[in-house]
Amino acid sequence: MTSTAGQKIRGRNFLMTPGPTNVPFDVLNAIHSPAVDLSDPDFIALAKSCFIDLQKVFHTQGPVFTYIANGHGAWEAALSNLLDEGERVLVPATGQFSETWAAMADDLGIEIDYIDGDWRHAVDPAAIEARLKDDSDHKIKAVMLVQTDTATAITTDPLVVRNAIDAAGHPALFMVDTVAALGTIPFRMDEWGIDVAVGASQKGLMVPPGISFTAAGEKALAKCRETRRPRSYWDWLARLEPQHYRWFCGTPPEHLIFGLRRSLDLLAAEGEESIFARHRRLAGAVHAAVEHWAAEDNGVQFNAMVPEERALSVTTVLTPEGVDAEAFREILRERFNVSLGGGLGLLQGRAFRIAHMGEMNEPTLLGALAAVETAMKIAGIVHLPAGINAAMDYLAEALAEDGDAHQATELG
Image 1 (cartoon, rainbow, N blue to C red):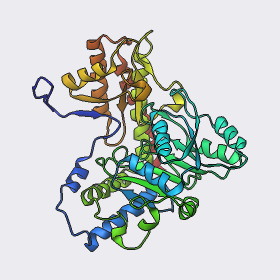
Image 2 (cartoon, one colour):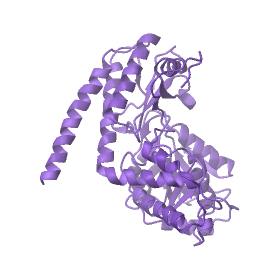
Image 3 (cartoon, rainbow, N blue to C red):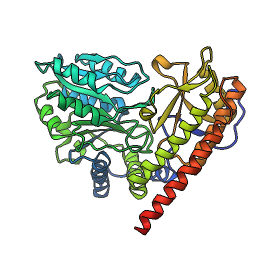
Image 4 (cartoon, rainbow, N blue to C red):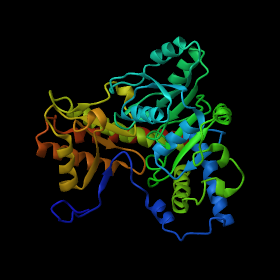
């Protein structure tokens, strides 16, 4: 990396942004391969194996469609296949990304029923239930939830929303954006009654940006067959045809598929429970540091006010009044070679985001947190010092507990 002054900063960049995230060397090596004939039987088998293993990641028996697009492309695929112009959706506020997904639906001529939120709390299931009960004519065709909003770093449990839909006795489809959660916390699409799930490559799946996914259940596929909206590239039905060139609507993104295959292998080797435990540890360390920093009056603070709602993939930290969060991020980038996410939407210039997902371990995280605390001192941002010590103490205890649990499992 080169600073704005033109001087080379030695050492590797600490990429702590919530997308793109760090890509494992094994995945990079897999991508660094020669192109092959797109009809090569070995490549067709490799691509098909990715579809099968993605079903395991989403925990669904339904098909997982893969697009050469970022998460916004998968959003549009879900909307285009399921909703006609003039149909209505219910969107509970979670932050920037619920608003952006709703805006995309509006652009497509879909009517939006929006449940406002304060960007600091998870979705209120009672509000969803009440709104659906009021919809006695069943004009609302879908509920659109963002599981983890990357801007606010707040996670809503999809199961509580599913329960609210059921309690209302409403037939609406349940659509969930799990882009910033997939591969970091449990996701049980079929078990939780999720009809459509949207994911992407560049976060917990540890692949460069460029491919995204929609997973569809039986109810969604049935609605897709009834939807009259013109669509071609996004069309699920065309991608269900047996010819392999239909799977990607043309030339496949071979090198990203090579990388995805290797990433899925790495995830399977680590195992879901170990992956989730690692993300709990990493998030816990960040939360311990921020909680310590925030103990100083008029200093930094969590954006997510309820501890249980704080994401395990990214943490959004609000800066004190009068502090330019973008200038603070520049100090980290230019002097420490540490890249944090910036505030989005209502939080632009008022927050920074520390990602802790995907290809991430404890030493990398501790190094980044130490740099953040040092940069706060340089920038004169009010905080209680020694948050890094709180993070270390948390990790020491958590690693000891995880080690004991692992040993008990081995002996059992």
